[in-house]
Image 1 (spheres, rainbow, N blue to C red):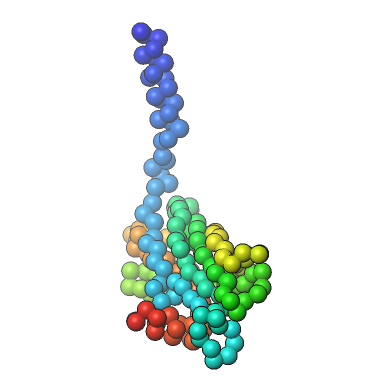
Image 2 (tube, rainbow, N blue to C red):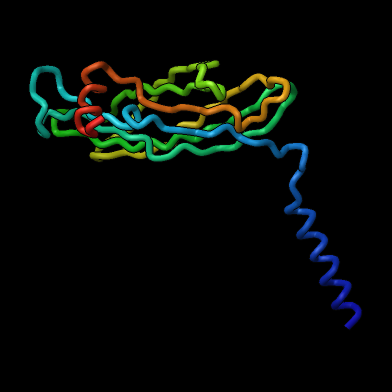
Length: 172
């Protein structure tokens, strides 16, 4: 009975050691927001047509997640951006290029940094593709400001026509 008790205590200590979190690495992460009118789009073939047969590509940001930690004098944020795409009837190519941005703003919504990214939707022989882009952001530490005082905004870079189409479709 004593051997079993010792074995349980030792195993419990080992499990606790494996799952312990380094409290110095715990930080409040920035909020993440996909902008409503920029979180999806429909790209049409060139010309005036805007019916379903004219759609070249549709895309939407499915989710944004990740981790953050404090390193030296800055927050390091590893973002995972999951993008879903669908090839429309007006598109016969095996892939399509997409552009999106990631911006960091403070509590007053002043943009501190903005970066553009280009990625490729790999359709191959399929009509749809879902993939994840991984990016790293570095946000300089400001005295007295925690990570959750920042907001990370994510959205597609759209043409004026694409943005107008989104706003008309959603009624905003």
